[in-house]
Image (cartoon, rainbow, N blue to C red; front, side, top):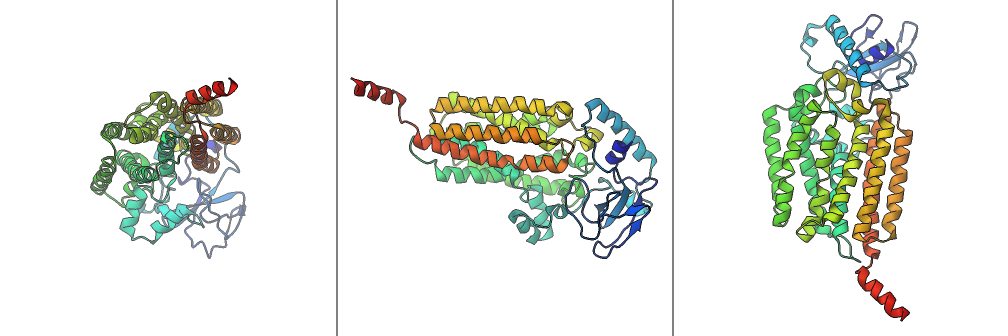
Length: 440
């Protein structure tokens, strides 16, 4: 029952007290224990200085707070898919029999009852630079920036790194990668990641409103309409098209062919437990496009293993990411590898990590990269191994931290590819011939 109460957090329940208050002036003691108040609601980690306590937690929801008698800790083990669905049916039945709020004005609320409607609340006490920029923008502009996830640039980094890897590998021996091309692809990653998020939110508008972490998104919260999002999407795709037209004809066709993947990905979570695989196919298209942008075609002996490594990498980090929402996903009917793998997640992630590292080694061998590259591959293997070993799939905060740490993996491999290209031999055949000549 403690797990069920955790899953239906925010629903009015016997023994739970709803107390609206000002966080700065609260000094209460409810029932048998003290009160912990402030922005301390799962999965956020934003402590309030008003008080501490183990038995009560404070949940922020649209200017008000909920004080609940709560389990002292999360479940120690993740649930199997069948168990999650069993708890889902029970929680849905509970929600249908219990009123969320006695205030008639809240009866028509479509979002999750404990959701943060203003996404800026999730920025914490020390917002990042993109989040500070978003906070200083007018309200309407802020909604558009949040729609394209400008305030959360980790997705743009993860989209850019396969492009950067491919461009670095395509550089001529002894030279740095094309800086202009890197800048063009970086801009494209920001724009097309924003377009992908817009498409995703348009498809998932109704689902997002039912999940705690996503109910504050502009479309789900009503800050923007579907028409607003459609016009914004057309603008982003137009900018993306202009960027693509700067490339050669082969790359234009190759880049345009990825649009179908971008559109189809949000639908996969409705029909299969492997949407992360479709995301891997989509997010790592740059591993093919970067090389073709430099050379006018793909060297498949290099590009394909690099693409396979990227897909395996996406399966790792996005499965970790999906564990943040697995209980909400089970309730509303969204599928993911997090639900598919359950307690076996670490074994699956280990298999993906082995595939990723093996593909990276094949890539380096095919590209004849020098030793610095293999050092970074070793560091990457250690980084991912530590992620998998220490991952707590029942701790959303830990999953979020592990997910965001993957941007360091992208940078590490990028630097290794630059170093391996700078030091690699210009022509292996010439080097062998020279060795034979010296011996004679």
